[in-house]
Image 1 (spheres, rainbow, N blue to C red):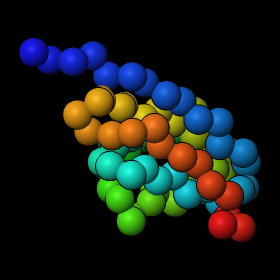
Image 2 (image 1 turned 180 degrees about the horizontal axis):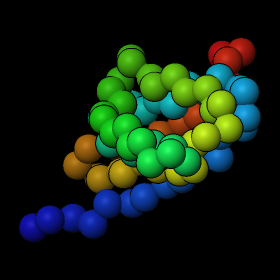
Image 3 (image 1 turned 90 degrees about the vertical axis):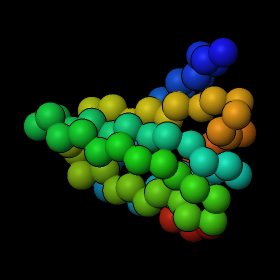
Image 4 (image 1 turned 90 degrees about the horizontal axis):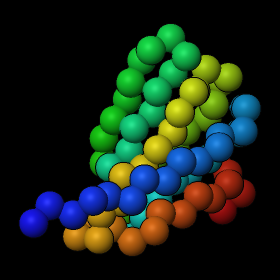
Length: 78
């Protein structure tokens, strides 16, 4: 049976470095204003680091119970 993923979106403040991590693998999708799409998997102990230069239109995470727990967003300070 194919489970329906939970989709979460994050606001990324302009010019601010954010680290997005999870305890288990989580798929991500990042879409820019020019149409560039970056996708991949965030893995434990390997958070994704993103700095919004003003061109990110969408940042979403696909969470499946079989893949992940809730992701967390941390600032550059942590």
